[in-house]
Amino acid sequence: MTNEEINAAIATACGWKYEIRRSYRETPGWFHPNGITLCEQLPYFCNDLNAMHEVISTLNDHEQMWNYLHVLKGIVAAHFEWEEFMCAWSLMNATAQQKAKAFCITKGLWKE
Image (cartoon, rainbow, N blue to C red; front, side, top):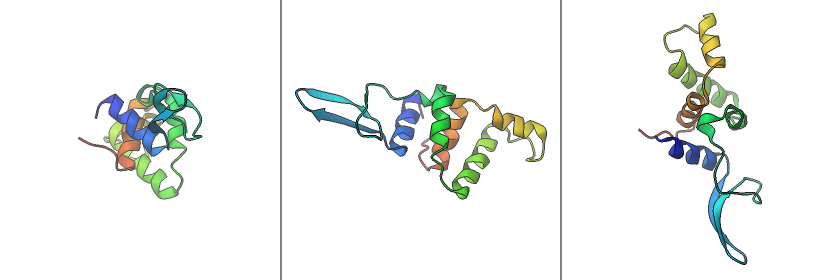
């Protein structure tokens, strides 16, 4: 998936909607889940750890959290055992891109 496809998939999963709203003129854009805020561009999830922090906080049950960590480990620390310090270090220092990919895989959004 391209970064743009990843961003759109994450945004949609988090409640963002791409719409053309009509008032006095047509206004295309991404609307925040609050339904009010219009953005011409989405947050750049693949490059923004703060945005990914908000996205990851939407994982709302232990099974999703565990699946996310398992997928992220496979991306950043596959060659380490869970108990190893470097595994934990790799998970903590994952890039926004790695976290975005793990989120998409966890949510079943990833396309090869």
